[in-house]
Length: 218
Length: 218
Image (cartoon, rainbow over all chains, first blue to last red):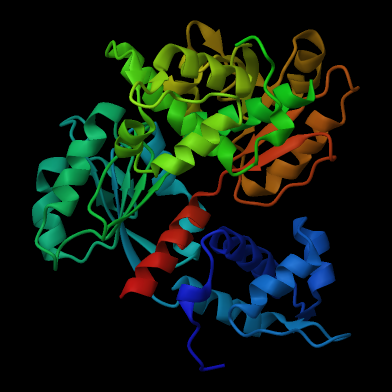
């Protein structure tokens, strides 16, 4: 399966599902399961089997009727498709309770994301340990840090009013040092140049979506 | 605009966008802006104007050419559509750093979500304050609490291995006391009966999606 995946053919709506497949397939791997059918996988992750077969076809995987998919191969294919064969350097900006929770989140390291630094504006926090003997840095040192060390992804966990100025600083660096992807947890819409990928995580938006469905059904 | 919105006509992909519109329109309200065109709104939230007009048409709002939409009316319509004219009672289960961050999240109260209790299994945490003089409860008291007080939404912020058993307890209550909506932050796929609405927030999945786009472009 050395054939490269045509990533441009993978629709945006499929990408989050690939991450769900990957998690479940790794669980199966850990339990020593060699093969899985689309129907079995559908039962495990509450999706329909035809959807799963279609998603897998994007990276050229076709299960064999009655035999299913090879779990190891699927894991490799999905990892390759998601760019998880590489290791990505991540920084967290904002060492409040959310930033701290994210720094402790066990899922990151497991998926190949390496937390290389954590920053905060408060002098009370600078120098405090955030795990593995590393300490929180002064956010004033953000630019020098990004020039010294490659940063692929910045997680922004600062208050809403501070988010845009942090992002402006990250994307204002020279192209070679520039952070190319941002995961924003601040509850505010932020802007970045087109070549920077921004994803927004918004807790109140998730709650509002729940409200929509609750209200619809009552 | 007393005509009720036909919520079943609103596609699932539109719901998260409604929450984005609502946030931006409230900012405009706060700045004293009366009217906004789909084109102006498009510029503010990085979406295309035709998409915005289509989304607003689901709840019967049609802007007037050259005049645009009435901001107050749009806010009311979107709130009604999202079920935000009611107040929803929310509990957080798990008072680790993530649960604590969520309890402090300013967006919740603003949108009409009322945090009525926080639970943890650790006796070191039970009785500790989490704001407004309220204290963390023992998770053993989860069921009695739900019988005593209406709980609409449970936010699950416990470790992965504990998530499903918490959810089983929440959905195992009598129909009248049952929690009908769950926002799960534990990095594991959880199951609930069909009539319970579950949304999963997965930080590593967000990072993996970023990885997909980063890798595609490099």
